[in-house]
Amino acid sequence: MSLSPKPTTRTRATRSGTRRPRGQAKAIVAIAAGTALLLGGAGTYAFWSTQTALGAAPVSSGDLDLSLGDAEWTLQGVLGQAQPVADVSAVRIVPGDVLTLTQALDVTLIGDTIEADLAASLGATFAQGLGQYLDVDLTLDSFGTEVDETTYHLVEADITDPDGTQAVTATLTITFDPATANRDGVNSSVNLEDVVFTLTQTGN
Image (cartoon, rainbow, N blue to C red):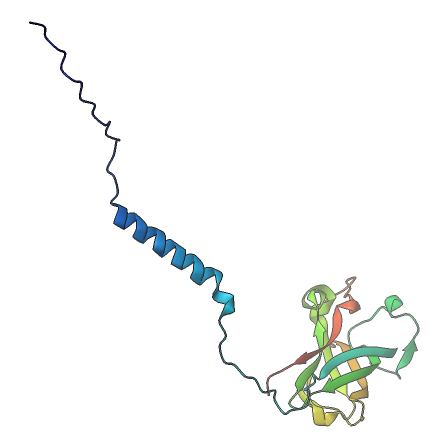
């Protein structure tokens, strides 16, 4: 009796990993497609809107400016009259002397609520050496309100010129304290360029 070989049973190889159910995969594809449609078609939606411009004319800004014009220096001693100074850098002052600057200014102040301080600001050299023996005083000719020895407060009403710029005469006096004793302040100097005219807007 002959023995017949047993038929070979083929088994399908199992893929590694867990197979995702077909229904779940289709749902993910559908969601992704819907999201792409929403993102890609966002510009096609129309929403109501309207606009109305203000019924007002343009508004403009004001102005604030300061420029220096001609200047003249004079020197007056304890005894005698004030004399013109051609070259202030050549002056040698002594206690009791008064060095005076007459300075032309053009002050521009434009603005419905604008206010400003016009001042003669003193730099570092006025706090040491010869500067510590000098008294500085600013006077404006019929213009603004005096705040202190070197500052005046201005409002727009102080500007009477229609174009908003007023010609002003400022007088700056520099007095060598006559009470300076011994040899205090001898052979020292002060830089007059440390006097700076400033115009600064202030609160109102």
